[in-house]
Image (cartoon, rainbow, N blue to C red; front, side, top):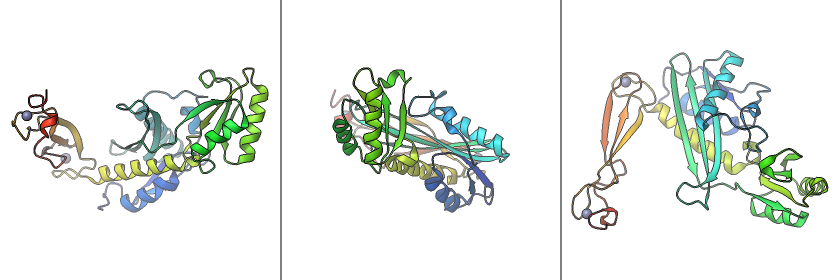
Length: 287
Ligand SMILES: [Zn+2]
Ligand SMILES: [Zn+2]
């Protein structure tokens, strides 16, 4: 992979306090030739956490951008990376949980912003109300504990006010936390959920790694005219012809790449490698 001369041997700052450098730094250093520095005591929790103690500000990309800018302001560096994850129901299959990870790259000197992402159904994201240690342990066994950490919250997680115990990784810690919180609970139940912070969640860490690989590919895609990094798809056009009747379908026929620096653009036909659509996707052949 070509290391871009704009970034080579520069130092970047990675805004994390959840050990995301374990997967982000090797890719950034090897594929892009950029050094990675993690500021000590960088508190990303003020930007929003998964345990809902602090609500996240803005969209996922805005939150990541904010962290990256903050890290540059603190350190005085001009390159930054930050990542942000979200968890929720799959847009097409509401019973399937999905993890969207984005990794943002900012270059303040050259005014560059590039975002990589990974959308994955590989996640243990889950929560439940439990009434006993046994019930909590059976939840734990379903979500990859103890390799994946857990969180115990007194009462209803939607109105977090009481006790929150995070980063539970041993059976003893789990049993103690459940007993402790059950004692404090007025309803006889506690909330148990997966700890989604990267260092407590190897499945999520893997998705952050994939998002970083996606980002490094985008950074190394350069404009054929001016070599500016981040030559990427900005729009797609429908109309892939039906294999049977040849009329245009709703499927993608082409994508447009555009340079953010010189505005050079290029159309790529049949981005998914297929020149016709299956007649089952055609509104005339299969209305
Ligand atoms: Zn260009
Ligand atoms: Zn047709």
